[in-house]
Every structure is written in C-alpha cells, then in structure tokens.
Length: 320
Ligand SMILES: NC(=O)c1ccc[n+]([C@@H]2O[C@H](COP(=O)([O-])OP(=O)(O)OC[C@H]3O[C@@H](n4cnc5c(N)ncnc54)[C@H](O)[C@@H]3O)[C@@H](O)[C@H]2O)c1
Image (cartoon, rainbow, N blue to C red; front, side, top):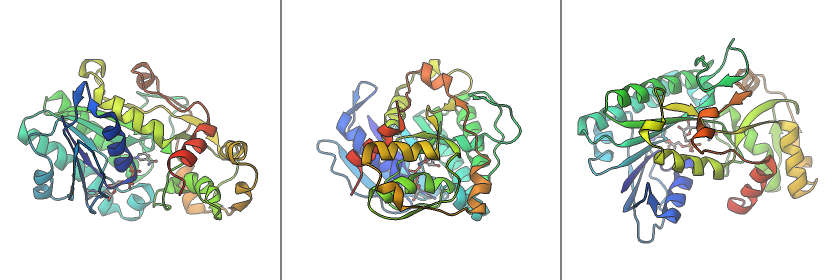
C-alpha cells in the first residue's frame, strides 16, 4: 500500500503522515511508502520501516503532477490548497490552485487508469447564504467566498470522476480545526486557534469577534482519525454523493475560553485582547454553524466530546 499526501508539507499533511506511520496499515494492508509532496519541500519524517519520501510538486503544473501521481499509488490525500482569506485576496491563485489544481490531480489519475482512492478535503465554507438551519449533508451548497466556491467545484469533480470510474473518491467538509499548532495562517478562521494557542504559549492574541460568536470546530487529533477512517470507507457505503461533512461541534468563543480556563487555569485568557476586525467578521459571519453531519456519523466518523479535549490535545501533542 503506497500513500501519496499532496499538500504533505502542511499542518494536516504532516500530522496525517505521522499517524499513518504509527498505524502502519490502511485497509488491512501494510503501508510500504508515504510520499509527501508540496509546493514547498515538505518536512522530513522518520518512517521507521515505512519509506517516507518528500518532494516538490505544484498542482497547478500538469508535468509536476504527473511526476508525483504515479501508477503505484493506492491512496491519494488531496490536501493542497490555499486557505480562505488568501483565496479571497488572490482570486486568480485561489481558482488556479484550489480548483484547477484539483482537476489536474484527478485528470492524472484518470490518465493512469489505476482508480486510486482519493480523499479530498473540502470545507464547511461550501455552505452559506439564505438556506435554512439546520444544515444537513444534502443542503445545497451556497458558498459566500471564493474559497468555498472552489471547494464546492472540487466536490463536484470528486463525484463525477468517481461516477465515471476514474477514481474512487470521497470528500469531507472539514470544520475549523482548533487548536491548530504553529504560527497564524491566512485563513479567516486563524484567530479561532490563536486566541487559545498564543495564550497557552504565554503570548498575547487578538480576538476580532465577540464572545457570543458561534462556530463549528474539530481538534486536529480527531480530524486525522477521521481522515484515516475516510480512506477505509467502502465505496458502496458512500451513496450518490461522496462528499459529506466531517463531524464537529458548535461552540461560542466564550465556551472556547471557558474550556481553556478549565484546563489551564485563568491566566492564559488574560492575554486575549478584544479588537473588532470588520474584514474578518465579514467572512466568518457568513459561515454556518448549525451543522448535522449525519452521514459521516453513521459511517463511524466522530467529533470531540468537549472543547476541553481540544485544549488538552494541544497541550499533549503540540505545545512547544
Ligand atoms: N485546517 C482547517 O481548519 C481546515 C478547515 C477546512 C478545510 N481545510 C482544508 O484541509 C486541507 C489541509 O489544510 P491545512 O490546514 O493542512 O492547510 P495548510 O495550509 O497547512 O496546508 C496546505 C498545503 O498545501 C500546499 N500548497 C499550496 N499550494 C500548492 C500547490 N500549488 N501545489 C502543491 N501544494 C500546494 C501548501 O504549501 C501547504 O503546505 C486544505 O485543503 C484546506 O483547505 C482545512
């Protein structure tokens, strides 16, 4: 079993590779190699008995995709993307990477004729606008950002390339992953990790929305578990739409901070500064939070029990 992680230098890609190495198998078959490709050289990981190869691949370039996606690959995790605020600022790059890049990877798989399992990371940003709550898996996609629109097109491609038998695809609309380690990124949701991560690391952070702002979250640990289960789902269980929400839970910013207080005491929260940022608010207030991920729950994917778990996982897994 050979696994290719496109976007393998990113946050999810690196964690996923480590989790796959620890597990050693996928779908009952031993993993022989994990191939991490990214537009930037991915961080090297010691795979023990599993060969971990790293290389550069730009998914907007078909020749580069052809080098990375080869006939011996059984499972492709297609994670490469630019995130929400970045895609909003740079319209051309968003469509070129998030949409055309996805098409390039799927076309390469079609050309090879090997029908790999492709696990695609969509986003809850595909939902939005004037659709009634609650949002269920087959609520119509009505993205209110370019990023959401690019992910929605990616989902249609996953479904059509699967229907034609070119790939065996599955897509998950990821909740916002928090607490995300590392530095703030260019996602509009970046503050949803930094208001916890920076204070837990003893640094100040800015919260651009009010404490009653609700949103839909999942911890990195659960996200990775679900992505691994996602690669193992049987095609016949996926139905006519292979894309679905990944389970998460709705909490307000105030509840996130209460959870941090419960796990780490009252000091970290004193490092949060409250400063309204209209540009960020414009994007994040268009996102939906009353989500019912019934299909994924039925298929055995899970959410965190409490946000206190998310805080604990950050301290156990990622705090420097
Ligand atoms: N983290 C979240 O909260 C979240 C939420 C919803 C959806 N997602 C989706 O999950 C996936 C992984 O997210 P992440 O948090 O690891 O993001 P990330 O930014 O850490 O990783 C994405 C990787 O894609 C790479 N990339 C960008 N352009 C590329 C190109 N042209 N060719 C090849 N690689 C390229 C980047 O260099 C980066 O390493 C993305 O598709 C993202 O849209 C993430």
